[in-house]
Length: 260
Image 1 (cartoon, rainbow, N blue to C red):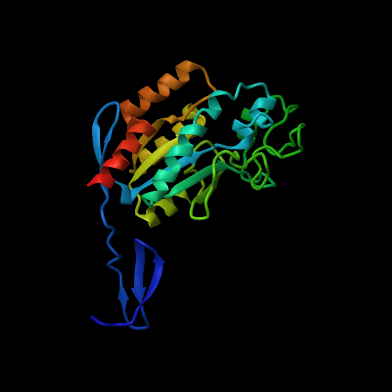
Image 2 (cartoon, rainbow, N blue to C red):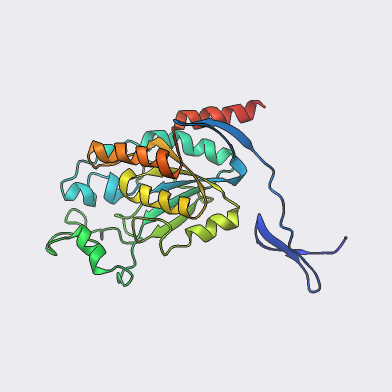
């Protein structure tokens, strides 16, 4: 049917329309299947339906002048994902895998933050909590648009990357993340960032509940919590919510797809 049509929507969830006709079949995606080794099974998945979520690799969590360091947390482990992500993310972009930065970035008025959430991060009410200025530089803790909530300088964000602010540990709670992923046609999610047992795990669990296939990228994920929290996270992901792999296995899978 030779009818002049205009695209409406974001591919692959797009229509083609004019004043009398609408093609709602949606354009097909060209499959990019790859084989990935994980700690429990070998997976075959489609890069064309995959995205990576990089969670909370922010100054407040990963910088020596950030909030965690201010309250006395050793951030050494929080910085461990930086180097493997520097290698992995460009390779994923080369395969057109969306890079989605899921950052804690509160509203300036904190109107969507309840007292029980504020209490977690400032239990006495006398410390430096959400929205309070850091003594070192005045940046407001986890405030959207502030230095505190920005991704660390060592990780490059490109214009084609996608950014989503979150307001709880889960990146899916009260955010547009699920809608964005469904518009992209995403079914498989790679998870990276900090803290593994808190924001990464909460986001991964919600993704699993929503029907996404979840892969935790072990060396691109870390936590400042005790070791038993890290071990429990790995156990629970493999037991209940998805798979565990690492950046080297993913890079090998990408290389295999080039060689075909």
